[in-house]
Image (cartoon, rainbow, N blue to C red; front, top):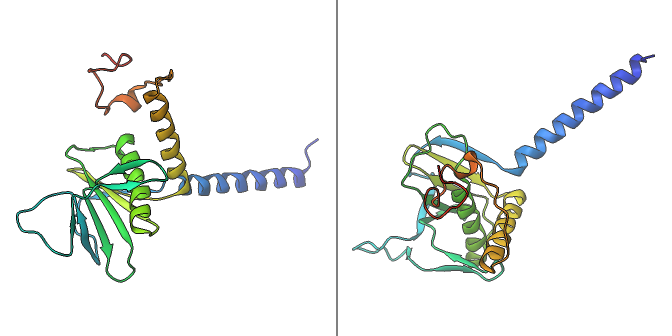
Length: 191
C-alpha cells in the first residue's frame, strides 16, 4: 500500500536529483552561442598571431606560447585583456560556418581549452572564458573543471596514439562530420 507521505518524499527527492543534475550539467560545459562581433567590451588586444606591416608596441606578435605542465604549445589568434579587471580572453577565429549547430566543433573546443591552459601558465592568470568565432556565429566558452578534464583526456589519447599504442576510435557521424581526416586518411569514415 502506498503511503502519501512516502510518495511525496520520493517525488521531492526526484525533483532535487533532477535540479542537482541540471546544475551539474550547466557547470560541466558552459557555452553561449551568439552573433559574431569582434568587439569585446572593455578589452584591448595584447597578443596577435598575425604579422602586420605596422606593429603596435603594446601588442605581442606571433610568439609561440608554451605550457610545460601539459607539454603543449600554440599561438591563439588573439588574446584580449580587460582594461579594468585585467582578465585575459583568448580568441580563436575559424574560417568555416557553424550554421545551426548549438556547440562548436569538438576539435575547436579542445583547441581553445588548450589555449586556456597555455595562456594561464604563460601569463600567470586564471582564464575565465574565451571565444571561438566562426563566420556566422561565435561561442563564449567558459573555462570549467570539466573542460580541463576533457582536455587532459584528449591529450592523453593523442599521446597514446603517438606512442603507437592501439587506440579504439569511436567513429560516429556526429563526431566525424567536421573532422579534417574525413575521407582522407581515416580508415573508419570513408563515405
